[in-house]
Length: 349
Image 1 (tube, one colour):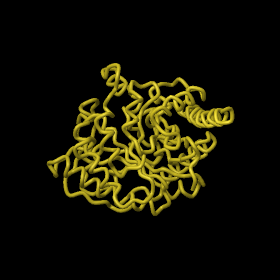
Image 2 (cartoon, one colour; image 1 turned 180 degrees about the vertical axis):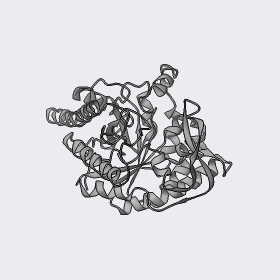
Image 3 (cartoon, helix red, strand yellow; image 1 turned 45 degrees about the vertical axis):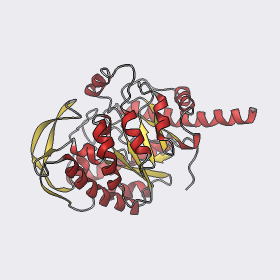
Image 4 (cartoon, one colour; image 1 turned 90 degrees about the horizontal axis):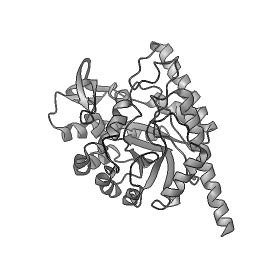
């Protein structure tokens, strides 16, 4: 399947409708149970598939409508994790506290994790589809380890389980499998020393496109406050991009618009597709298509046009649903405007 220039896509999550769960929360409670909940999750997924297509996105995701949280949605299908006795733990280097489950024995998959969601997504769109999974380092940072006693061993164990599910998702017809690793922007030395290597274990044997999403987090207060402490230049990417450039991962998703990331750091990803965040997830202000196209044009100084994929800075899960819809529309229209500008420039040259 050929890929249009500036193929627009999402980082991952989308807001859940009010009839499915609590809204504008990162850890929302479901409003239904059993078969009714399963049907409601599917209904919400279908709504967002249509919304993404209507907005002109080229790569469609499920919006993570069936997952309470992007990490725990995977963990719920893993043996060796105790959800009944959660503990309070600081995550992302104590940026915020969360009640997290505990690893209490050797990890194994109970079975398939996301077969239902992936097959529903594949059945209901003819466009390229992307499915997101939490990365191993980020999972390690979101559970309490009471068994392995070593972060690398624990991450490797999770990577092996992720790999099992990723291979099955590929067989379900998924075109792009993306691993979300916000922890790479927090534990930069560990990410370069062993995080990328463990990530590659999670992607081992995949022949579909592989991606990693590294951002500065959802638009929640804890993350916004943290970013305010990072100074005029956010250079976290600088430490991990060289390792990713040498890796077998095909695509890297990063934060750009309304950030303090020096755009020249993207040059460190030579040879990779770059999903450039052109939509701010920490503001309700709706981007214009012109702003999106302008960001794309600016990034073309460092990323070849055939490798630039406009994207959201991060997931939109905690955002107001109507705001998210308008931001999707801006993303699709902005990508098309950038294509038009290139055509006009080529015709006039």
